[in-house]
Structure formats: C-alpha cells, structure tokens
Length: 243
Ligand code: CTP
Ligand code: MG
Image (cartoon, rainbow, N blue to C red; front, side, top):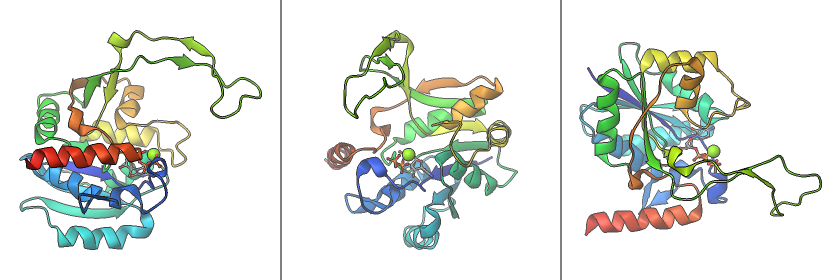
C-alpha cells in the first residue's frame, strides 16, 4: 500500500524577509517546494503528494508542478491552504483518499530532507507506531523566560526562569508520519483556523489525544529554511551534493 505526503506550502515566510511566498522562493533556481516534492517522491513508499499552496497562488503552483511532474507512479495534487499551518495541513488531509493509511506531513520549507529520513519515518509507521517524528539533539543550551516585564522594549533584557536539562530536549523536523486515522482525529479535535491553540507541529495535536508519539533520528540536512542565512546554508549543501 502506498503512503501519501502532505506538503504545507501556504506560508508567506515573514522571517525570510519580504518577497514571494517562501515555498516559491528559488534555491539554486528551483522553488523550495519543488525541491521538497522531489525529495519525497524519491521515497519508494510515497505514491501521492498533496501540495497545500498559498490560496491566491493555487493555479500558479499547479502550473509549476505540471511543468515538473514527479516521476510516475507518484501522483501530485495541489489544494489551497489556510491562515495557519495547522489549517493548511487539515485542508491537505481532506484531499487524501480514505484508502491511504500512512500519511506524512512535510514542510515545503525543508527542501533538502534525505530520502533515508523519509524512508525511516514510513517504516516506523508501518511497523505500528501511530505517530513518528524525526528529531536531533539540541546543540544550544535553552533558557525558559517569564512573561515580558512591564515596559520592556523589544530587544531589551528578559528575565530567565529556568534552564531545562538539555540532554532531555530534542529539536524536531519533518516529515512527521502518522496512521491516517490518528492524524485525522487529532486535527478534528483541535480544528482551529486561528492558530490560537499554538501547535507548531502535527505531533503536538496527537500528543493532546494521549496517543504515543515516538522519535526516530532526524538529519542535519532536513533543517528548515526560516531566515536568510538558512538559504545560504541550503545553497552550500546543494553545491556539496553536486561535487
Ligand atoms: N505553512 C502553511 N500554511 C500557513 C503557514 C505555514 O502551509 N498558513 C507552511 C509553510 O509554507 C512552511 C511550513 O508550513 O512550509 C512551516 O512553516 P514556517 O517555516 O513557519 O513557514 P512560514 O509560515 O511561511 O514562515 P514565517 O513563519 O516566517 O512567516
Ligand atoms: Mg510560520
């Protein structure tokens, strides 16, 4: 049985700076989302990729992907996204046929994920885990801060509340893989187009169901393009691959 991948690509990329929506920005001349779709299509298990496009760019994204079809038998679909990542994933999931039991969610903003990471996530779901997340140890020490003190200016000093034990922290990536019914239930129970519930990944919604989430090793090259420096790093990774 094939697995499907949902690719949320409807964000604007505020932290990357002004310009076209982030998923459409070029990396070595090719839009980030095309890199991401290709990376997923390289996995034998993936039979369907659902790209969730900026709502005002759905036709443009459809045309872009038609120009660069994934190698058969991989099918591509494009649906319009929502105001938050969570809403975009929900809209993508609605387009996945009921018969597909393994669903991955992969950020368009992670264009360089290695196929081995995709394969490892699919394999863990197929082996029976309802929710699988690729993760890496955290390299920076992380501080917890309190609410902003009265009159604090942006960039001004912030009081520290504590320092969590770094050995117990992990930085998580995508693709996150799910048993389809679990992901659908998680999104139904927490449908929230405003993003007020603040989930920044899909596994967090599954955790709220009380369903176990497990981690598998992530990969450095699965990093998310968020700020301008990340694009510099992505170009360098691609150049190194071509050597
Ligand atoms: N995303 C989405 N729909 C939204 C917001 C985000 O599909 N309404 C997608 C983005 O396109 C991206 C992924 O979710 O592929 C991860 O989000 P993030 O890195 O935060 O991207 P943006 O929201 O575009 O960036 P920013 O937060 O800097 O504006
Ligand atoms: Mg965002």
